[in-house]
Length: 233
Image (cartoon, rainbow, N blue to C red):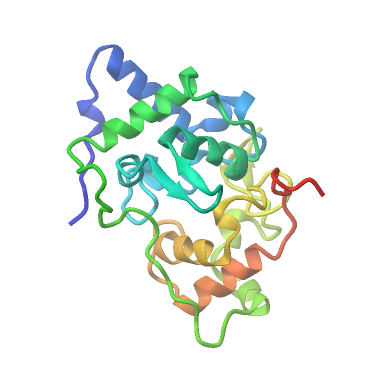
C-alpha cells in the first residue's frame, strides 16, 4: 500500500543520474560528504531510514511532493529547500546550505527521483512517523531509563553518546554535544515516541509498547544537548 520508489539500479547513466547519486551520497554520509554544513555527528539517514526510502520513517518520497507548505515552526510557507535547510540547522546543529548550492540541488534531485510517479499534494500512507497517542498515565523518565538500558544502549551506548569507528559514528549520539539540538523535531517527546515505536530498536520496529516508546523518548530528551540556535539566551 506504500509508494515504491525506483530501484538504485534504475538511476540513469547521465548527468541527471550523477546528481541523484551525489544526493544519495550526501544523504547517507552527510558528515563526510558536506562537513561544512554539519555541526554534530548526525547523518540524514539517522531519522529517514533506508536511504530515505522506508515508509513510516519520514521517507523523502512522502515529503517532496507536499511542498511548498505552511509550517507553524517558522510561521510561513516553506519551500522544500527551506525544509531541508531546517534539517541542517536543527537536526545537524549546523549551517544551512544555500538554496542554489550544489549540495541542495543534489538532495532535492535525489528526493525528486525517489518520488517518481508519486502524486503531488497528496499525503501518502507512510509519509511521516505513525502517531502514537500519549498514554493516559503520561510518561516516566525513570521507566524510560530502564527501557533504554534494555533496548537502546547496545547500539547508542550506555551513556547515549553513540558509537564510533575511528572518527565516524556508526550509531548516532542521542544526546550531548554531537547530537541534534533543542530545535530539532526529534526533541519533541511525541515525535521521538512516534519514530521510536515504528523504527526502533533497529530492525525491530513495532516491537515495544506505546508506553515504552513515550517513556524512552522522555528519557532521551531529558538530557542536555546543544541549544536551539533561534534562542539568544
